[in-house]
Length: 189
Image (tube, rainbow, N blue to C red; front, side, top):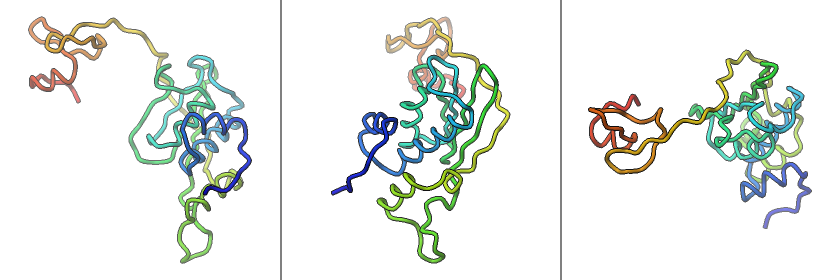
């Protein structure tokens, strides 16, 4: 049975979205709060904020619910680096901040003892000082253009619609990426 904890309102939204309380969600919760504070911004109404996440873990769900950086709006970029690192940029000002989980953030703090168990990590992530968890630095960031909407074309093989800019063209036909790969057409990936 999990201990009873007081859950802040913004964490409650992330928890409801994610489905359970875990260290990964709390890393994102604390990182999103730190980035928001550093840039002095709130949730993105449209695409004002852009998140570059260097992982696809539970932590990203907190950013989505707290700062409204989502794949659907095109202001969430995933880089598969396997790092608990998040760069949040603001389009209007061009300012950006990089929030990186410290390597030793979840250690028990005593040499030779090892890392904390799950409950210990949750407790530390809820209560530790921000500077004990993260390295936070202002960075220069070339923000991508706002998301654009492209025409849909029909794949000549499977008949499904695919974004025009992702279609592979061959001999007057258009193919979605999976069909193009099956046919041995160059997909560029």
